[in-house]
Amino acid sequence: MTNCFFADDIASGPPIRPFAPNPWKARYALNFTRTSYQTTWVALPEVAATRKKLGVPACRTHADGTDFPTLPVLHDHSTASSSSSTQQEGTLIGDSFDIALHLHNKHSSRPLFPSNTIALHRSFNRHVDALFSTHGAPLVGYYLPFDPATAETSRAEFARRAGVTRWEDLEIPQGSDERKKRLGAFEAALGSDLAAWFVRRDEGPFLEGGTPMYADLIVGGWLQMMRNCLPEWEELRGWHGGLCGRLFDALEEWAQVS
Image 1 (cartoon, one colour):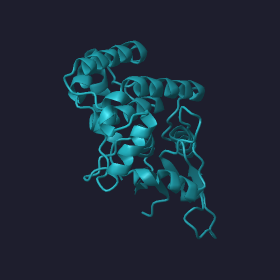
Image 2 (cartoon, helix red, strand yellow; image 1 turned 90 degrees about the vertical axis):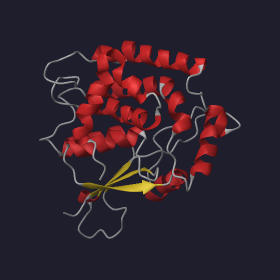
Image 3 (cartoon, one colour; image 1 turned 120 degrees about the vertical axis):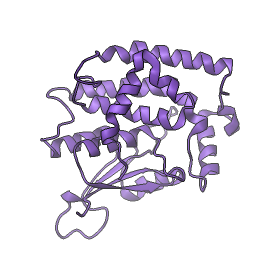
Image 4 (tube, rainbow, N blue to C red; image 1 turned 30 degrees about the vertical axis):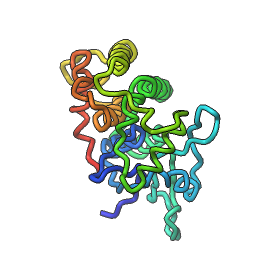
């Protein structure tokens, strides 16, 4: 079957270890809706140029207000006209939440959003992003699995964004008092700001029990980053009665990388 969907993600490894949360949100949504697609791997230093070439403006900004071009970008060539001949024809979507909406509207038999929950999902997405960005990202930044071919450039850019002189300044040493303190704060925040949303149900570990919705995939995207980048991943899996571990394992059905 010819793929009509192409999803851009950040190159890593080798071997390939997709780690960025927003491309994972899109990947989960593509797999859940049973959409046939192919991943295009983009070197991290080439992300801005890739979005510019495709004509997809940045959908995020840095703290100083400048554009923050990121992935994913979804190319839906199923919407191209029969006379289209260029790769850019069709629909291009450069935000993971908008990608989920697009897939939801195309696949009514595999809905991602229960009725009348899109606004709630937007709020939940911002909430979860803020939670993991504040508490999880500082613990994993030093361990991102950059592609060795572009690692030096990528590390320099991350150090610049963080306002430090050297990449090594981002390390919070394993076993240090500072890291233990931050891990404790992360665990507490997950308990107060996330675990309370999940009511333990016999049917399954998702927010609504046995069937996931996009909110579950949002959390799953961040858990994929933790799995690939956090040295204490096994510890995190067991926090709050194993909430994150159960959710992560249940989402494996839709975690294949195409």
